[in-house]
Structures are given as C-alpha cells and as structure tokens.
Image (cartoon, rainbow, N blue to C red; front, side, top):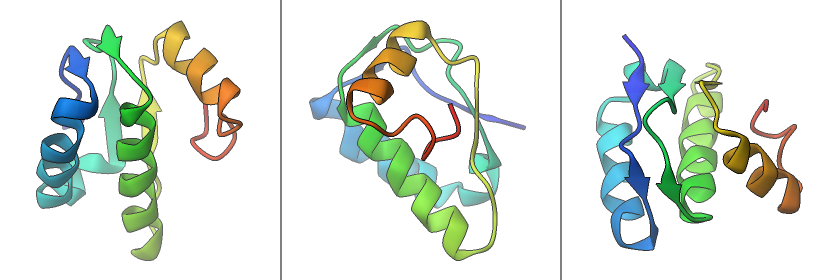
Length: 85
C-alpha cells in the first residue's frame, strides 16, 4: 500500500511528515502525491530524506501521481533526476 502524502506540505508540517514516513519506512517504497496541492520546497526535503533512508537499505523510492508544480519545483532545484521525476 503506498504512502499517501497529505494535501498540504509546508515548512510547518514537513518535520512531522518526515518522521511519520520514517516510522512507516516499508510503505515509502511508493509515495502517492495525488492529494498534494498546497506545498513549498519543504516537500522536496522530505522526499530526499526518505529516499536517502531507503537507499541505505538498498530500496527505491517511487513517487507517483506527481503534480506538475512539484516537477517544476524539483527542476528549479535541479533534483528531477535525483527523485526520479
């Protein structure tokens, strides 16, 4: 079952979300962004953190249903390839 991102991920909520994801590491193999519509660059930090933790365990992070705004933001930061977007 994929890990479903909430509709809002901002600086105020990112740390809690990151911790929640790390507590559910097996679910992070697939992260579903279908509800994500209000976010800032903090979401990228969370995704990179999760990806780093999974790679350390020789696992992959798959991000699905990526909103175009997230692709653009990842492109601005130069991490599209890093996140597999």
